Image (cartoon, rainbow, N blue to C red; front, side):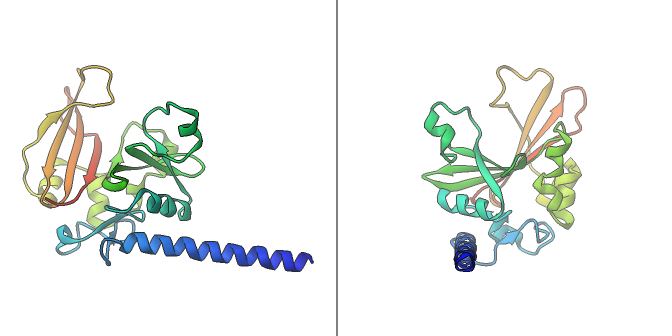
Length: 221
């Protein structure tokens, strides 16, 4: 009897595992095959990358929230709310906010945020904060990027940005999560909308060398 139960349990795990892989494959191909996965392929070193579908740890633009949940589950990740949860129902359920942070299932944020509109992913933000705990830096997704893309995210400079993405005029923005004016820092945005990329950097007003980097992947315009 124990053997029969064990066999059924193994069969159930196999079926559920296969279903999870199917959902991930479906989500990745829902908006075109051949997506460039940044943890496997050097995006900026690939020819005509501007015309390619971009995948960040399995997440692509256009997938539904439910598909994002399925991808996260198969990769031992979790989607957590970025804003405070107002109700007990929100605290118990999966992230239903407009933006969700992607974290390890057992802990730290991996530097990826998903933004939703009409329950579909419309923006994928990849962040490389300098002032972060070592355990957070250790699991930052940018550490898994390859080649020129790895260099861009992990050794960012203005000259490297211009070399890879081309010249762009920076415009000063504000930290929306800040409670007041930013007196010590400047937040600068560079738009490459035809390539589907928006670059955000933070600089000290005493030292113009960028230190925090955020890159938004959006649909090209």
